[in-house]
Amino acid sequence: MLLAIDVGNTNAKFALFRGTELLARWRIATDDRRTADEYMVWLDQLLRIEGHDRADVDAVIISTVVPRALHNLRLLADKYFGVEALIAGRDPVSWGIALKVDEPQAVGADRACNAISAQAIAPGKDKLVISFGTATTFDHIGPEGGYLGGIIAPGVNLSLEALVAAAAKLPRIAIEAPASGSVIGRTTESQMLIGVYWGYVAMIEGLIARMKAEVGKPMTVIATGGLATLFEEHAHLFDRIEPDLTLNGLMHLYNQRSTGQ
Image (tube, rainbow, N blue to C red):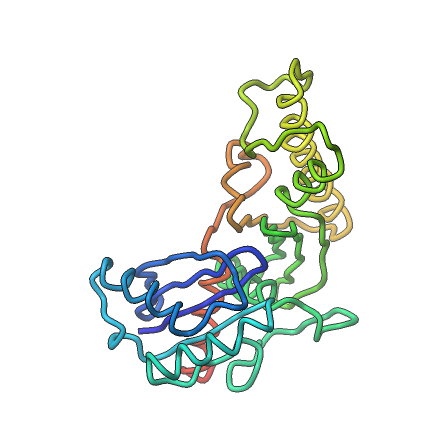
């Protein structure tokens, strides 16, 4: 079985695949100081809970936007699974898609994986992938699967943290959909929630409309990331929500490599 690992700025996601079937997934806070031993203590328990053993894992593939986390994850693969980890974007699992931007080497591994996964979902169509993470990214994926560029905006939590950090009297609040559709808050907390939540909905609507207008063709809009479900009640925004888009991209990347596609 394949262990796919995607390390983002906030969380590291682990998933177990048999072929194209996702068997289990877990996440842990990203910490580039975490050792291979610490990863294994945590992961071994979760594997057993799901009815698996580390001996079941015969391949590991890693995608990371946190370079300092890579060493210990490679050590995890070598020491505890007895395999050499494959690194997404490097031979023998190079992307296999066109990165049609001015700085292709700067495209995040997660965004490239999302492009691969989006192409498997909607081949032959223009795609817009919106990923809600530490940053919120909007990526245009062409009909042939090429990465054609996109947008980077501050993430929902990042925006809220910046607001609280810069304004001494503002309290910390949890991100959630407001209880009503009113955009006039009666308390400090409700006004903050309205500003962050409805402000984000307005940004998403506006940027989707602008990108569609610029592309000039129908686009399949796919949302992913930990906070994508926060906006799922606004069904008009997305054609589908795929929480495991990046992990599935790693699976497709591995399978394309192993089948020579």
